[in-house]
Length: 93
Image (cartoon, rainbow, N blue to C red; front, side, top):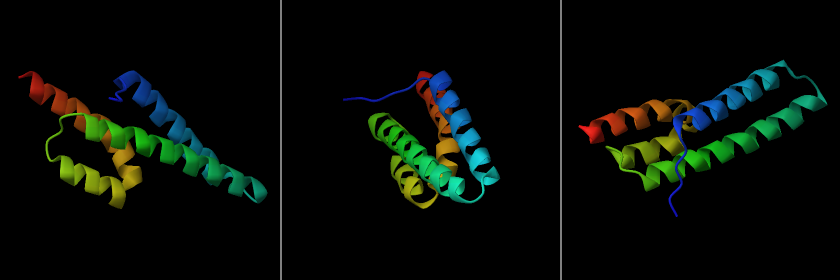
């Protein structure tokens, strides 16, 4: 099963993720725990989407990108759309 999402949907997911991060930074007390858990769950879902997309598509240096998913996952979630667009342009030529 191949999982792919288009750029508009992924950008929407990133905006929601950024809002989650911002709201979590504003929370205090018991609400902070709830928002941190929601943020972690959403982050895990995005991580799985990006990881499945990396595995399923042709990407230059796939091993490096998979390793970076484990070492810098939050950064990779935001960087991956640019990597994917660059790879798509390279494969069209």
